[in-house]
Length: 151
Image (cartoon, rainbow, N blue to C red; front, top):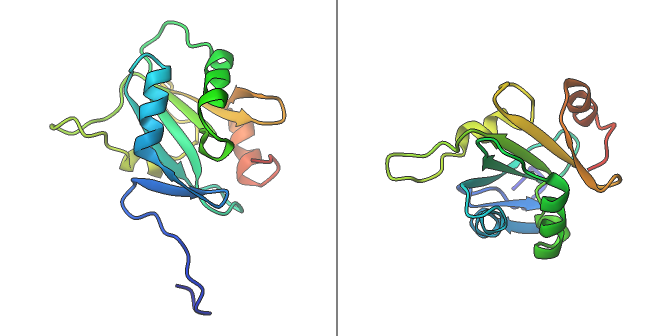
């Protein structure tokens, strides 16, 4: 609740996030995306973007190489998920961090957000105007952070 008495939805434990006025279940989204990708490990979480209400969906995907056709993936995502549940950002990484009991760890990923850092990982942004995922470069990251790119 803010100082004026208005109540807002807050991310409770990483199991949901709010985007475009909808509550998005990370567990359900992980199941759908994993199925579309041949049952690879997927971690879904919300990331903050300055000047944007809610959290944008981001999916960390265990991808050890080979080809991942992002256009084909986006087409499958568009058929399987409503607009608000589609990941705005993708992070392709060698493996998704897990605990000793194989629970996916999202805390580090949430803190790092969508800034390109690790050269072993690739981060993509869903450019809805172009209808495709585009690699997040330092220039694109800066433009998103300054509100020059529409989400």
